[in-house]
Image 1 (cartoon, rainbow, N blue to C red):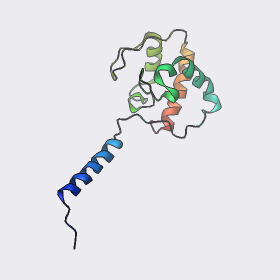
Image 2: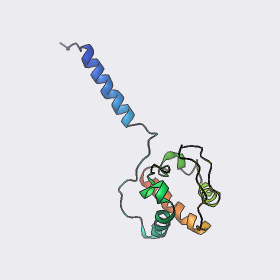
Image 3: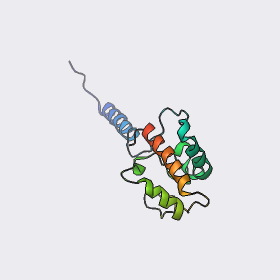
Image 4: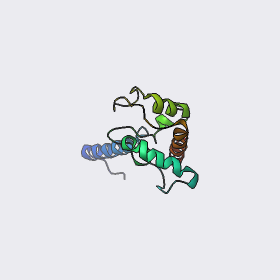
Length: 131
């Protein structure tokens, strides 16, 4: 015989299911997988990211309370191509996906620096399953 669930049991199960659903929400930022060191060919980009971007975008581009995570599906290559990163660094960006405010232009970084930074960020994204 199958036991009959009481209304209290049903509420508890629904709360558990709801909690699992919220925990699995794909809109949440994905963290880099593995957390290992960047490959040698990306370490210059990592250093430039740390010096110029990490204060707002966080370690391994995971975001902070000052700027969004770049390891996020919003920044995947087919939505924000590499040229979007170049424009953001050179000109700044008006806030449009997040509520962190506008991003100022980044003084002192060259287009070549940004290329190296983007290669590093794209590697972090791939590590997190963002293609």
